[in-house]
Image (tube, rainbow over the protein chains, first blue to last red):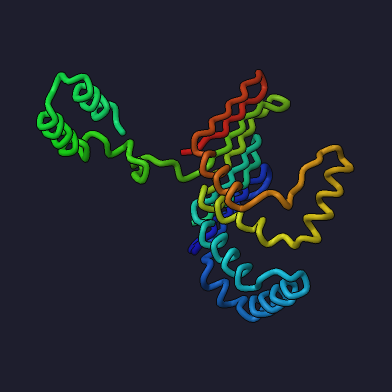
Length: 85
Length: 142
């Protein structure tokens, strides 16, 4: 399960922005929306005749495999970094 | 069967050693095997087994150097291919139709998650390097 998402943006004419987002507190904060999203996904699964349990399992597998992912784009004086730990 | 064991059996077949001597030699090889053959056992995984797929692109555009560095956990790719099993059959049918129209007659319904997993499994051995004067692309696992 991802614990921390780091976002770093560097732009030529502005101060570099560095954000460290703790995943669990944000998920707790957004839990009402998360419940709605899960319900919507369950309805979508029913409409498209996909096993909701299988979909949930696969979704959890994908989320739990996210730690270690890192995208780093650097061009001249502009840079974006997204790292998941 | 490993090569040394085969040699012993060949010697036995040729009558150069007795059955007892062959047994002793094979027993000696078995004793040595945990030390010598750990890396080559099918179930054993070497310590340095790659965990991430890396894509590194170095470019020089209008005199400015650029770099794209992407690291994707192989576990994420394995989990991702399982998403293919969740694609509704109707969507696969429509995708097949569009692919055929575009001149790519691929039947996506025949693509099994196990095949995709095997593909990801063998990605570990993939290494691609493209070297051009203004760009260098490397795809590898680490």
